[in-house]
Amino acid sequence: MSDAVVEISGLRKVYPGKHPVTAVDGIDLRVNAGAIYGLLGPNGAGKTTTISIATTRAVPTSGSVRIDGIDVVAHPALARRSIGVVPQYNTLDRSCTVAENIQFHCLYFGMSRAEARERTNTLLEQFRLSDRAASYPQTLSGGLAQRLQIARAIAHRPKVLFLDEPSAGLDPQSRIAMWEAVQQLRAEGITIVLTTHYMEEADELCDRLAIIDHGKILIEGSPAELRAGIGGDKIYELRMSDAANTAQLESRLRETNGVTSVEPISGGLRVLAKAQDGLLAHVVTIANEFGLRDITTTEPNLETVFIRLTGRDLRE
Image (cartoon, rainbow, N blue to C red; front, side, top):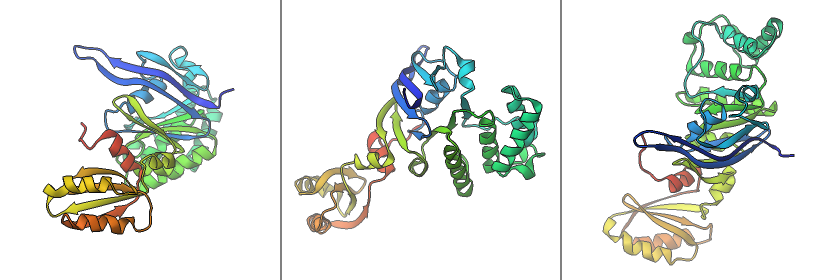
């Protein structure tokens, strides 16, 4: 028996037209039950399209998605019983109160009126919305509206909750509250798949991550595995007085024992290196010969991995 509750195989989505656009290009991934899995990538990478197909809102060109063993294309209505969705944008019904947004969702999924009321009250309390039960969505802050969307999405007790850019537009306090809510849902046994381009969010929440760009998975693993894959324990950023000297300096540093990578940056070089006694001092000594102006030291993080894989170009 497979432990995977989400299984995506050979997924492709091509939008036809005079100039066809391939939004998803052969994605394979598995998400085990009870995990928090992140899809990390720049704008236009294919994250939202992947989620849209997995949640039956779009049909793939080829490939398959199974949620709890159910093919989402062959049996979309059945699959939706196992799926909760919080899209990028606020989809709350503005003509219904906070409580009604949850209660009508429960009724839609076949609960009796008594069951729907009980489930609604439970979720209002769980998400600290009881005092706003009679309010309308347009009166809520961004953080409260997001909590309501999550509460509504899990009202029918789905196996998997899909969150598409859950922190977009939230202030830091609301973002932290949302993280706590997500971690509590995982503790209750709900599997969570989220898309994000916030490195801190991915690192804080996710057990495993896939970095996606141009519709393909570039790398997959735990946050720790992805950081370790950079190949260095330390990052030295060297700022030089004269950028014309960096080519020679780059060559010297590449020959230095313990240096794993050297790459140009604006005004200097970025050096990836092993944690090795005396190496920093040696790098500084060499760089001083070429007009070292400043040096900063950091450790690899998800942003380092992300930029190295997807580049620094701005995306629409």
